Image (cartoon, rainbow, N blue to C red; front, side, top):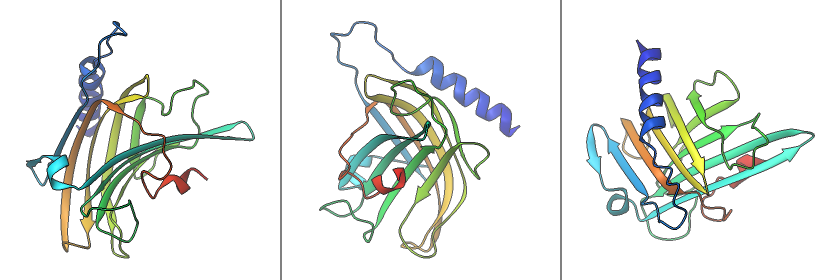
Amino acid sequence: MKKLLLITLFLGLFLGCDKNEDHHAILEPIFELELNGNSVDPFEFYRVVNTYGGIKEENGVITKLFVLYLQRDEGDPRLDVEHFAVILKDIDGLDNGQLLDIGLYQNPIIDSKSTQLEIPGDQDYIVYAYTTVADVHDGLICLEAEGEFWNPYQQAFYTVKAKLENYPIGQDVTATPYAYLLN
């Protein structure tokens, strides 16, 4: 049943992501977020909403990283304040010039593609997480993510669903405190 759900999710994303052939038209970015079954406006709930994507090639191995970083407080992105991050990492990326490869990113980790959900604190942990990256084009990403994690700030389990369509991938290493994961 879970595999059928993942295949359905992937097909829906693949068919639903708008890849506009008219290069003069501006694609509208979409960011939808659901916490514990409730729709949340990420730009009202969080004060800092940033992304970061990077590539590292070492000894013929390509590592790719994408981070969606959401911080509750104003100010510079930091690890020691309440925040939430979806971190996608591929430790065996394709040499295709894209900031991230399409496919399924999971936790627990099954292959080279992993999803992490981060809340700072010594008690945070992931129950499960998976992300389907349907498309990456022209510095934009289309994905859907779902997971459950323990939030030590709220002392509660959270379920999260996120959808990004034609969302810009930032390349400023200071936009999130997680660029170090590329090393």
